[in-house]
Amino acid sequence: MKAIALLSGGLDSTLAAKVIMEQGVELEALNFMTVFCTCTNRGATCLASQKAVETLGIPLRVFNVSKEYLSVVKHPKHGYGRNMNPCIDCRIFMLKKTKAYMEGSGAVFIVTGEVLGQRPMSQRRDAMNLIEREAGLEGFILRPLSAKALPMTIPEKEGWVDRLKLLNIQGRSRKPQIGLAEHYGIHDYPCPAGGCLLTDPGFAKRMKDLMSHLPDFSLNDVHLLKMGRHFRLSHGVKLAVGRNEEENQKIQTFAQEEDILLKVSSFPGPLSLLRGKLDEGDIEKAGAITAHYSKAKDLANIEVTYKGVDEDHHQSLFVSPISRGEIERLMINE
Image (cartoon, rainbow, N blue to C red; front, side, top):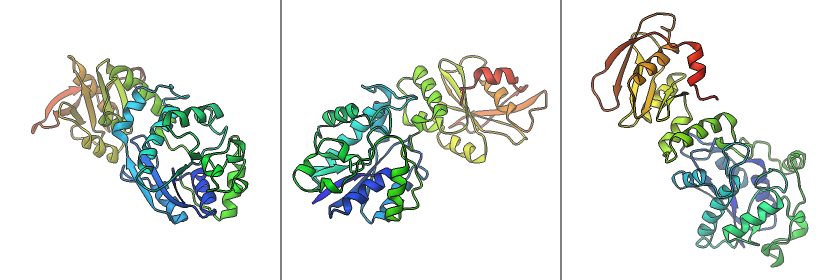
């Protein structure tokens, strides 16, 4: 008998997989990675899920679904959580993807690490029922950690798994999972359950700003949100300012054709990216902000160079660093 395990790399999904493996079920792990995941290495793979399958000894498939997932974030049918996390719609999206994969894999049910009552939005009993129904998977999702607190699933009814060997964990306490991890000798679970930037209050503020000023945002816009300090100069114009050399390099990497790049001439400082439909004075204001974060910030007249991404030659302007009060007024709070 084969099943698909949704594996985040967090403790719960790892434990759920282990419980089912002990019943002799063959498992294949799936991980759906998005631009909002926090457990990735330069966006290439999910480090946490990779570590988990090494512990479990099962195969893993990782799918980057970032582009498709943007539509879920932009228009969640069931709304957002406390921040910008569309948890119910996210779960439905991932399960539909899993169902499509399962149909060609030989697997007959899905295993998840969900715990009844652990999260207020997506792990309530009614939310779980809704998610199963809308994903077209009623009865085929087995949640081993909370199975005894939930109705019998098809795998249990058919005898594919023994319900008596499943668990009855509920609520937000982590003590039962930690105890179970000790029992299985699982000591290294690097990514806590969640791992999503959309649940982070600071990142959520940036997302809300982006969505209110640019509803049809792109993956590039989201990548830019993950680096630097951000400033809203007007409805259609924003500025990202690098905090260090690594962020400066990343900002340059994500610069697009119509963006303007600025830096202070002759002094160490950030690289800034100006994006949007510019009005008169926007480049000067961006230069003043850039100067504020440079080693020349105590000078009165600072040369800032700027150019388009595809332009060969820089232009220059002279600015005074912007005041702290203006910085606080324009900064998108983190």
